Image (cartoon, rainbow, N blue to C red; front, side):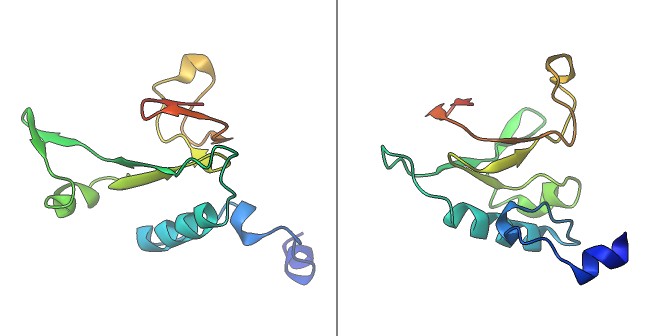
Length: 118
């Protein structure tokens, strides 16, 4: 089966394929490439950029100044770019009762506002 995949690669684009990479920077570059190739909606809405808000002992920390503090402990990015058509993967089990668990993959279909993504 593996040899067949190597001889006859899928004609699908690299932007609609799930990639497993060894470095977060490579994943970030693949995500930027995929998002930049998506068409904008009819309203021409720009992508939404969500910036992480980290807290230590109840005090909010700037994600850029303290990126080194958290990034060695988690696989979560400092920023997340969302737009219609973007593929997303859920990274925890907080909504397990709704059928969403770690590794669930979906597609952003609508961005209502910065707090409501479908």
